[in-house]
Length: 452
Image 1 (cartoon, rainbow, N blue to C red):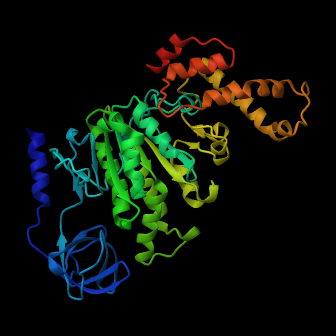
Image 2 (cartoon, helix red, strand yellow):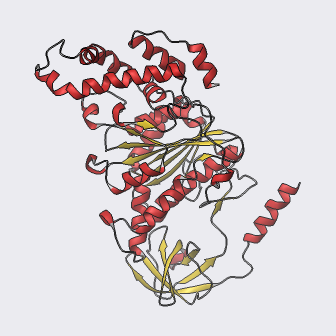
Image 3 (spheres, rainbow, N blue to C red):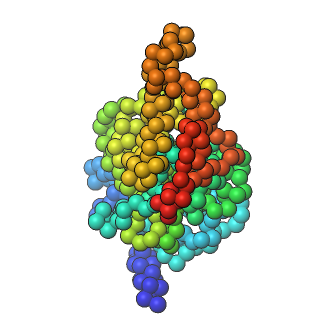
């Protein structure tokens, strides 16, 4: 009863006691200057422009200049004129997720866009831009999570509550890899954020890649590339808010976001409009302040639930040292690199094992599992070092026993890493298959006990 009463009190506190409004004084590009609101607006507050023909345009305050509030719209500015009324919304942006959201597709305002009717609202309001759980209240990462993809399960083992990045250029199979994890992962709930995706690809991903089975236990948040920068940024935060709701219900949540780079680009656009100075590659200082605020929301909570986060990073020109890649790599707990050269060889997932790492390994593995993975990595590294000489026929067999062994095992290891998009491999099946490839025995009982 106390919890319900607390929710009601919080709801009443969000109801505005009076209507305050200003007027549009100027419009420059996507920036609206609002006057007459001194002391009533702060950064992040929302207001609504009452444009012509009854059109309502939601906006957000992103800065101030000469006693005027600078706001950006969530939609197009058609119908806005000098003197247009801007009504201030005193409520904090929040959503009310519920279990009924599973299987639904929503936008950045948590409105359904799948044509399946209205969403059932939950009892508790969740702030869209909530602060991460404090470090001293957060539990440590849990046991290993089965992602259903054997190269990830073995070479970049992920624990419950861990945050990983998927670094890839365009067209190397990251969407398919995300869909495989959404379908095959043992997580109880999947929350997917499609940020800045092409409109054509959204339906293809949901219908073809994710499919009815994956969608049934998923909530998909969508903001396409034609939507405003605020909508793209907001969709990323809504994705984490939905994931936080299910985590608070004690669920193990898998949060997949494609992509963090487009979130950063949206924040750059907002920052530049507000007059921030551009830094490296045009990214503004707030981009690098907002990235940890978003990514740190994933992870274990103070209760039983967890959010395991996998965030894609678009690597511009396959440059893995560009600013966003560098910043995200430093925030997350590991990275999975998809390699265009491997994709050109038609081996999918195109994961470059030698450049990918999970920071929870080898602590989460048994000694036997660690030995298997280390041996496979040594063989892959030895072959990679001599690959050019091998292709040219310049390597003489017998020159190096390790390279000889690497050559003999390279084909089977490549077959092991590759996996069809409809093929599922569990954690135990992955280690067993790797042991068979390497000609070793594997005690699955000990490993299973460690996983539990």
